[in-house]
Image (cartoon, rainbow, N blue to C red; front, side):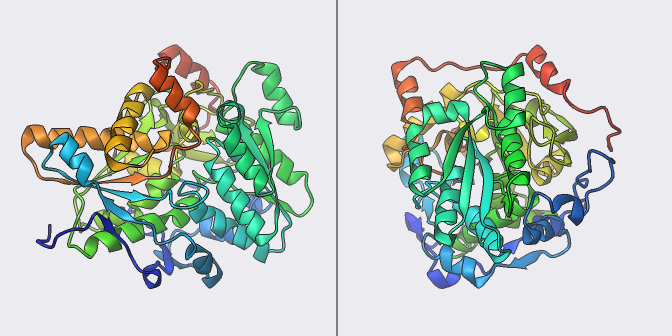
Length: 460
């Protein structure tokens, strides 16, 4: 670390906003396996994807060779409304923990959506507008993606239908109202408005829904609506690409003060914010330029990486997406109604899955009571109420800082604070009232999800 005094907040200037996204796949020694067309089991072509996705996003999704991809000036101009986001030295958390570790967090909550999701929402709606589309559909878990996309669609003048996971819709009615304020039509999923929704309700009449269910409904709506495409806020490669702006800004901010992280930690649901945070650092690691530890943190109630299988699986419950090689609990897995709605997804980004499978990163799972304990501790000393999703990363960052204390090691820890928790007061109330419980699926629970995975040949 440099001898320079590091300020509490490190800001980049407007002129330092990255003009290119970082495509970590270009640096990967082995690429993740291609998407498969479920009808033919052959690798998906651009034409296979064109019925659902925007043309430019398909091109980005299939690009494994260009390490840097230009950000259109129109997107950069929108970014200037809320970027660059601050890099914060968590001095007060360090003091509370009495640790020799230096703790930093990249804060993505300084926009109305309250999260990192706007980074990709802006890009996806921009490309849809350029293509001449008039309507988009999507899913949302905790509501952050739906809010971000509602904002972007309002700005560019596109209609939007959001299928919101039912349990989150019930827990976070105010998040739904923000989306409606920006003009979105919000439907609790699973619903009786689609064929796949009615089928899921018939099989699981009391379900609180899942991201897999909501994806199925959004795709069905997209293919049946004129001049409409489906967009999503996580998992796929082009979303990780857009979120790489988080890691690029983080790297630039820390380099101003000669800081190199020893450990980088991010919460992981679908994998886009984690993938975006680590991408440029991981690119350097793959080239032998650093030896950073990367840690993915997921909920113990939906442990796709720590207890899942690395196989081809559908990305949605209705089995309408291409097959993706990823860590998965099975597309039929129904997670419990935990409060980290944005992490309640059965699978994991193919990029993150491949990096984890090849040993370039670690993964841990955390129970939600421990997550909220960390969230409360952080809020009381750092002054930001974190989203339950983000608090997963905080929990493990605290664990690692305390290990440094035990070993008297001065390590530098960076974690992603992906959003604020001001729409999550139902969850905080449950924690404060002592009514929050931890649900950890049994092996039998997981087996029911694994049973939905297709029996097809898997590469090692």
